[in-house]
Length: 280
Image (cartoon, rainbow, N blue to C red):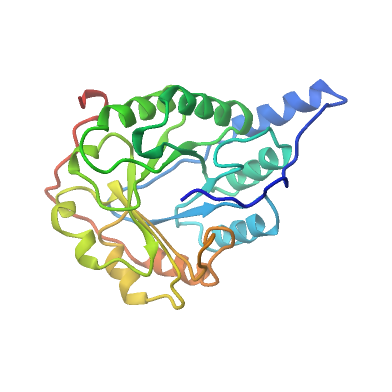
């Protein structure tokens, strides 16, 4: 889901009195690389952090400190892409990484119709300016035919050392997309998906392939989180609503982290997706 948060509210650097300062910030951002560990035994939290770095980012860090065993990944989105270079984002991402929260840079793909060269350019900017850990491909195609497009983008990100990728069609996919990115959001919508959506053919594969993003959920359903955690590697549920449910953190984030920390599932006899480098 794209956002339109800031309008003209962004910091544009017109000049710097010291080139050394610029160099230090870039190197500091690039050196911090918390490990992204999404596997079949635990479920983590994937948070669209679609706001300028402020105290909300600090609140997220506090939740991570309270639940150090929970994988928390933040999607950062300066301006539906990297936008203009902003030192506040450089430092904010560095703070997240220092707390053990890796970041994914947001890019939109227009369901496979956006020129891939524009996207690879955005990926390079995220790498060079902000030192993110991976990429979040929004508006991902879900019907067969665009697998090679996403595989190319995934491989490009990996070639730059961005080691985790998420695709977001926001709905269920063709199994042929498994392996084109590391994780796919199979639900982004208001309310909670049915558990049936998360089972079916998905159960043949590691839950690390799948994630869900739910908004407009007034109260956290503990039983749902426990059940869903058996089938998805990443989850986020918020009570915030449209037009931008991702602008603020959910009021029950601490409770969600506690539930995720206590939920685990290990499946046997799973089918592995075709390795990305071999998928045609």
